[in-house]
Length: 375
Image (cartoon, rainbow, N blue to C red; front, side, top):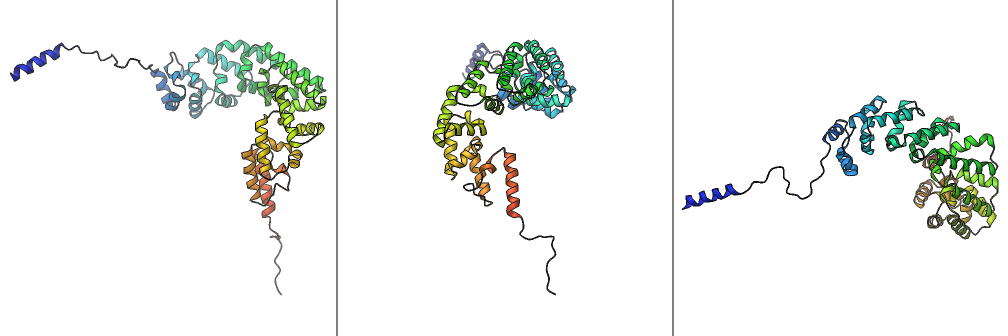
């Protein structure tokens, strides 16, 4: 009986249909990676896990040109570490076909012939270089237009790298904004001989100004003129604000000015002088200014000190407190001293701080002078 039961069981097992090995039990199949792309990236020492985490979709695309991208960059003098870094930050580069890459290389070398400089730019702005071929005509037209303005090649390269949207759109749109900037410069009394330098500086400091509306620029200048700023002062603000005036609007500036005047208890003319010293004051929203005023006054700084050195409002409360503590450690009291020592970039502050330390640590005697000895 036992033998028959075992035989019967085996016969039943033979009738059970066997599932093919390639059939997955999970209902949704995961997309398959392009193994050739993955292998090439591994060979290039690219952090595949980071790519999978941030932009894993790229690894599933067909066709892909990872080897071609590496060859292009290597031919331009890029070392392996730079190639790997570019492909980690912007793995979409492997989706540009060789014809597009060749066209981009030709385009960029026309304004930046130095290969080493170009590789540095690509490492910082890979998305600007590895772009669609559909924009090539607009890019060429914009390059030709900015050449016609006699702009420096470095400025054009910076525009292409940091604000690629302005080069991807029709040249006529950029021309409208540049014409508006030049006309505003002339109307505000700017000298014609200096206009090219002024425009280069403005575009270099804020490349995105080209993407703003010319109407907004006009409205903001009218508003500031109504507030009592002279044409010379408006030109100063337009230059100092680095084009940020196109990112503002009359309502936001009005709120900021009213709040600042209320906090400082100053007159209209005093407020204009403060804004001219610190044009960025126009840019900060009310809640940010409130936090910075509160932080400064909590540190014992008076309102009259702030009015004398309004640029201290450009610093965050955290930075101000950190700098005050460092200065206090060497005996400098910001309550009675000048606030100028707080100002500037990190490098500016460190230089001022080092000078202060030298003054404090300077010996009271002359170490070179001979010591007096008893006869």
